Length: 99
Image 1 (tube, rainbow, N blue to C red):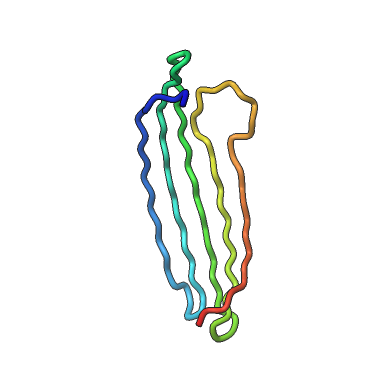
Image 2 (image 1 turned 180 degrees about the horizontal axis):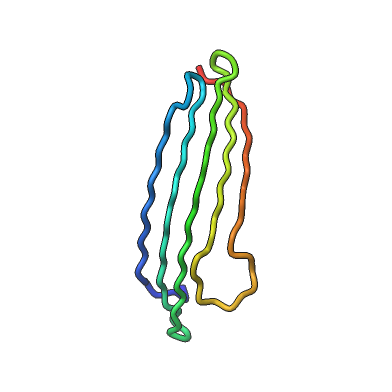
């Protein structure tokens, strides 16, 4: 591997609440920081990433649920010189039966 071990740390928090008898709302927030050094050039490559996720779950009939989720990822800090996007948004919708 071209990467030496570097410092890595992260923290996350989550909460879930019932906003009505058949409706639940959840959220997660995660933060990750990575500091690594490449072997070839001994160059630093620091990165920080934050992720925020929100979920809404609705029971529409007995045991039948519809759940929607939005997740946003954002790269806060990077030392590389690429011209790529530094964030993304993903949406999911699912229906499931709980027995």
